[in-house]
Amino acid sequence: MVGFDAFEPAEITIRVGDTVRWRNDSEFDHTVTADPGQAQDEDSVMLPEGAEPFGSGTVAPGEAFEYTFEAPGRYRYFCIPHEAAGMIAEIVVEEADE
Image (tube, rainbow, N blue to C red; front, side, top):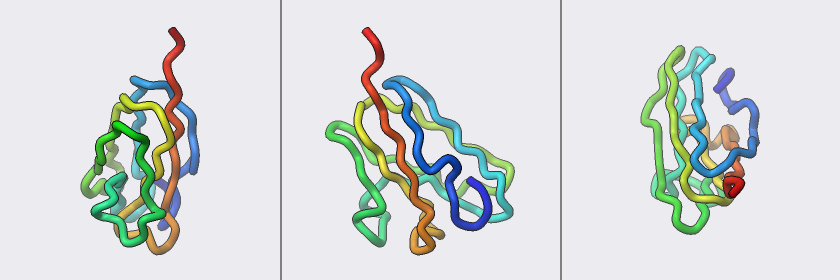
């Protein structure tokens, strides 16, 4: 999380079972939210079939949040206070190699 309104990178590809760590390197509070019930715009969130909604709560400057992805597919998530400013990103989760 950088600046006022950006996740960097805005899209990554990982494998099932990988853990992503978001670190807030900005001066503002942010969230990592993949919960349709908390979105102002339904297009701000996408969860693959079988995935549960998740959210970090407030991540203060200098703090971090981690989440392990167990379901393959495309996830779109956002920052609650900066959703309208376009703070949205995506993670593609691929099946692990057998």
